[in-house]
Image 1 (cartoon, rainbow, N blue to C red):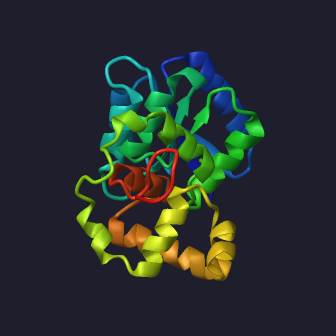
Image 2 (cartoon, helix red, strand yellow):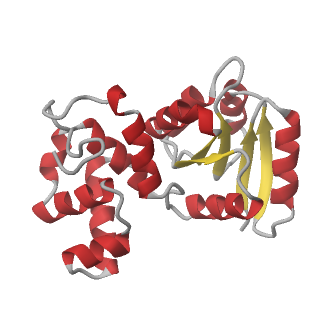
Image 3 (cartoon, rainbow, N blue to C red):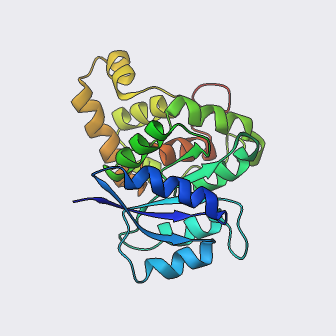
Length: 223
């Protein structure tokens, strides 16, 4: 079955370019387009979509608020925020709103296609180290360490908290496995349980929560 994609961007030429790239793939299909967030939400009421490519700066309803509303719905499609280097603050807000990652608008076609496939399969498309650099840059927007932590963190086992800390510090599953002397499969299981217990969509949101709660300090280690 093809991955059903919706393109959301107020620039028709950009949507046309993305549509041409996706249309050439045997496993993808552009099923809807929208020129702003409000139109995207409207389209989702009538069209089944797996992945949304979401611009951030649009009229009427921007991509961040649209992402927040979309991701709050049950069985919501995955959202990829499209940004540029000078709009990192929007990418940060988009991740907090529930997006599964962010990409640059000038990303090579191959990377865009791989990202769509990864998100569709349930993975985040932003490398943890990249997410960490983004959060480090916007650390002043986050609560200071020492503030009350997310109450659900108390539900984690000691091992799960250890894994969460390493995820938030930018380590991959393989690196975590090496650090804790575990198998990759065991680490993946721990990450899955962390997501379930904390009600998070993917490891990108694990990183965001770890910074917000002071579990990890920007530019440093655990809190």
